[in-house]
Length: 85
Image 1 (cartoon, rainbow, N blue to C red):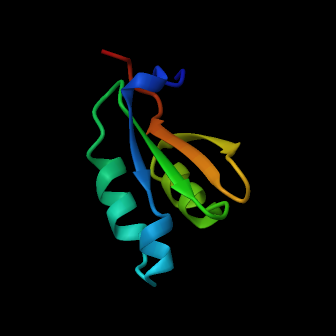
Image 2 (image 1 turned 90 degrees about the horizontal axis):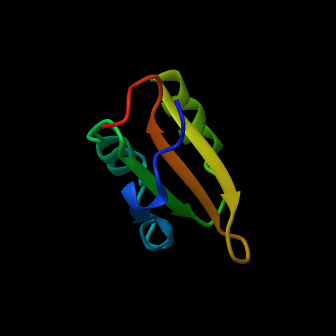
Image 3 (image 1 turned 30 degrees about the vertical axis):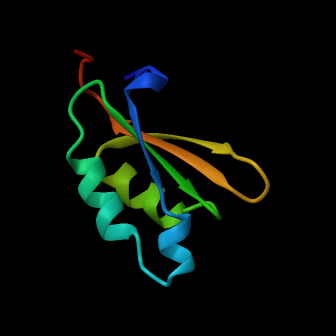
């Protein structure tokens, strides 16, 4: 499945959570599993969240990883194998 248009992605910046010592995985997982066909979630993190990418790929989500500004990473997630609305 092709990546949805950028304007169909909801942004979730986890940098502040991580700086407070809060694990963002539960919130990431909740947000990505709530996605409908044609929607996506953009996760902004201060490091490449490889375990998150691997976990969600195993659950049927597609992803695209981009290097952000400085040390930041931007990871786009969307449902794989479903038709866009």
